[in-house]
Amino acid sequence: MIDLTRWSALILAYLFLALAVIGVILPGLPTVPFLLLAAWFAAKGSERLHRWLYAHPHFGKLLVDWEQQGAISRSSKVVAVILLIVAWVVMYLRISSPWVMAGLTALFVSIMAFLLTRPEPR
Image 1: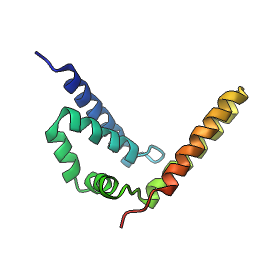
Image 2 (image 1 turned 120 degrees about the horizontal axis):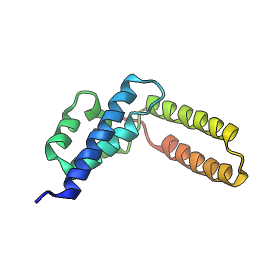
Image 3 (image 1 turned 90 degrees about the vertical axis):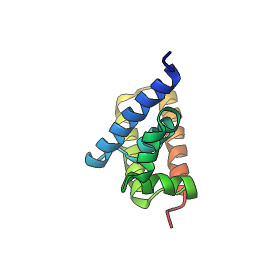
């Protein structure tokens, strides 16, 4: 019998890992959030993939920094905040509902506050 939960987690882990890899290559696409999601789903779907992520020379440090210190690098914070601002401007130009924009503004400001209050890795 196929464990549907495990397979779903494994598929999502690989999907988010692919997005994280694309984020390394493509400016504007964040790496860390997708990497954190990949690690979380890998822990549920594949112990082997989970170990590989933590042992990876680039990804491993980001994951360990987050897990042990709750830390996000300054460069990751800068990219995330810039992307949030760009996304907000695009939505501001496209969305006419003030209620939707108010909700998005509150959400984006909350995300920025969370990111900016995280420590930087030691």
